[in-house]
Length: 261
Image (cartoon, rainbow, N blue to C red):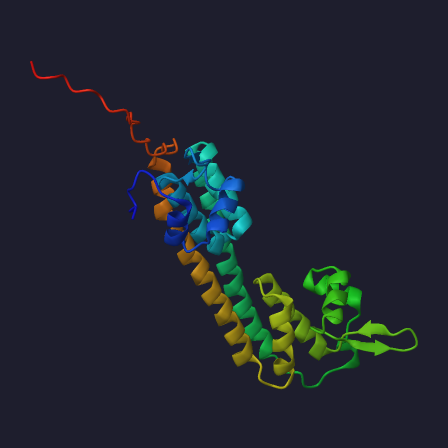
């Protein structure tokens, strides 16, 4: 069985080492994530270390950056100057850093918003769609989308059903705004908001933010795991391995032995 340092590997060998299927390895070659392979006389692909490193790097990067950006980074390792590849990696790490900062801001803001009292509410504290959108720095269409998704559902005023946001709605909108900015998707928020309205405010928000923090940590670790195969990819031979040489063809004709003199 070939090892990591084998000069030639089959597609199934690369697939097993990467945790992919054979078809996924073929797809990665088709998409340029793996460099072109050589073929045996029978048409079988012959892989080398460069293909293994590329597949391992892509697998880790896909967790850290998503499959599209992962493919872009690994293809750059094959075709672009090293500084351009490093710039892409720097951008990936910087993006995760920004997400962590946004998460910290969301945690502090949501804690403060959740603790705000709603006593002594005055009718004048309510807002229209345009007023709340301006206060949050979002478009009115964003608030309408949140309404349609059941995140922040305001009161409707007759006769036209005009949206009117009471202070409780405004607080919910501020929390949704912070969590959305921190990368939270609509579906988890839809499950979270009813619990907030029932009085279980900060613990539920904190649990949601902790889950997001765990997800970011997994992506950061994946970028770290990608460093080794990417480094090996840069130092691996750029030429694909040659197929094993065919054994020499020997003639089946019997040769006459010289008669003893």
